[in-house]
Length: 342
Ligand SMILES: NC(=O)c1ccc[n+]([C@@H]2O[C@H](COP(=O)([O-])OP(=O)(O)OC[C@H]3O[C@@H](n4cnc5c(N)ncnc54)[C@H](O)[C@@H]3O)[C@@H](O)[C@H]2O)c1
Ligand SMILES: C[C@@H](O)[C@H](N)C(=O)O
Image 1 (cartoon, rainbow, N blue to C red):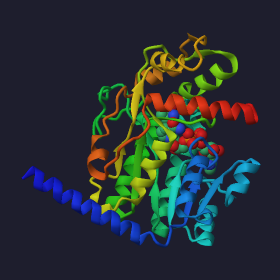
Image 2 (image 1 turned 135 degrees about the vertical axis):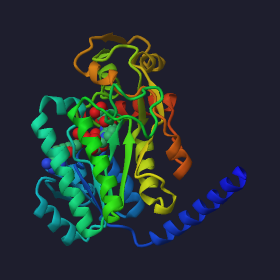
Image 3 (image 1 turned 180 degrees about the vertical axis):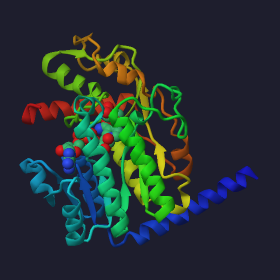
Image 4 (image 1 turned 135 degrees about the horizontal axis):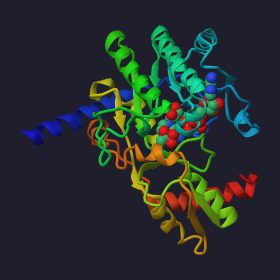
């Protein structure tokens, strides 16, 4: 019986995927807010390959560098300006909204009023916008949406969420608001809770940033001083997997989704374990540890993330493990340092 059910679900998924791809023959017009951060630029490149350069509009409140400006459409969009957002959606016939604007966990603690404005008021604006114009809206959440009362190893999809950072509070708010709009108004709200995302681009002020900074410091200086203790275990994922997850989830037909918010992850490691893998590439590098305020945040977050519901419902399957991640980062960070010094 269970086998029959599984076969039926697989057939349904295959059919619905085929339907979904066909129905996407006219590619969606997509707006990415907060697009000049760590995830946005890569996300635009990825989605432009899929849906066409002109169909993915990157936006932010800061000035793009020349490479980004030449890569495809870029516009100014402040998520605190509702009328401005309405104009963009109308003028560009936007159908999907990917809402990346946020102050991350560490930086949010340094400026709580701004985090409230950007993360909470900004969310109010984009969700109303999505409702008014019937947009499909993707809002990333995070392992930071859990807190010290949540089970940490593993952290299931549905459990206690009592975060102790304004970032985490704003993300729980976003999850609940999105689910509410889905049930109340039929809004096509979709949300993935990402772990620390690793890429060679500069991170925006999070607690997991050490796993990016370590590559830059080791390759430039041969030394890294880590702000977390050596045995601090956190869930992580390479940006390629994060973008694959985002795009597969965005394309998944509503019929196969049992939830609007899913945990996704690829691996969990500690600074010590990451450093051990890096020694193969830079045998004589040194790592020292000087924990700061970010330690307390990390200690309240999941250590291992349970993403079995995403794997079951829309066949989420990460590709990059820790060995691949170190190999990719070593290569890409070396190239970045050679080309622009970051
Ligand atoms: N990077 C990660 O490890 C990670 C993990 C989990 C979830 N996320 C989520 O993914 C999203 C993107 O993360 P990121 O790492 O790219 O963040 P980031 O901090 O690098 O970028 C955020 C962007 O938001 C922009 N922004 C700030 N105020 C704005 C405003 N008023 N209007 C428009 N834009 C504004 C900033 O200019 C910045 O470019 C965030 O919502 C974050 O919570 C990221
Ligand atoms: C985990 C994620 O939300 C972000 N990188 C942070 O540390 O704040």
